[in-house]
Image (cartoon, rainbow, N blue to C red; front, side, top):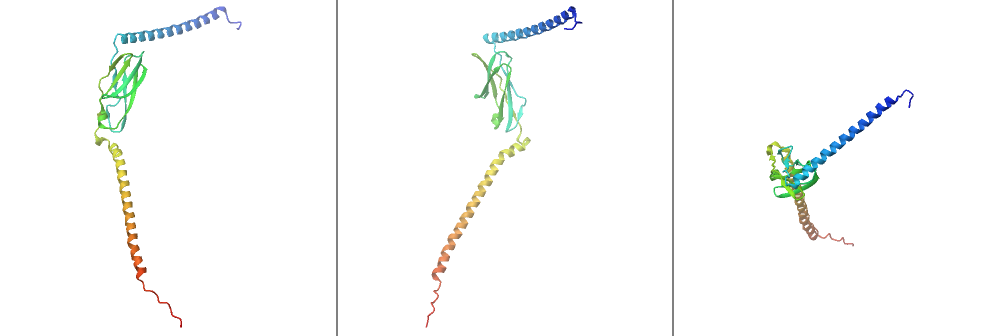
Length: 202
């Protein structure tokens, strides 16, 4: 401690430090209090059968065949553990669990009938609520020639492979038949060829 530090200066510094610490403590206590109040309100709503219906939406409405999409299921409750389940019609697809907010489900549109309807269910304790149906709009085929090509390419390659195998088989049969036809001809030549007379020694 320097000689120039007066008790008044040290007292002012200490007071500012204590006041800053008290402000932080008060802010922390206020944040905790608001969080607890929100949790109590959410729990009260659940206990009073006031579980709100979830919302199901997507960032894209028009999709194409083979496209990856995501569906977001959200609810107003943010302080209780919620189980989110996704359905395609009446078929169960997937579930996720988190504390309120929103969850994302990732899908791939492989067929035209997979455009919907989709719905989301939230489950808290013994209460459950469903969202409204959500449907994607399928884009026209001509707007996605690469999608059509990707569907036709495997069939085209399979057809070429079958043609190559058939041609190879036919060539093999023709070669084998030619060998069999030439074999009796050679046997006839050797059978009917005149015997070379043995020279006679006098």
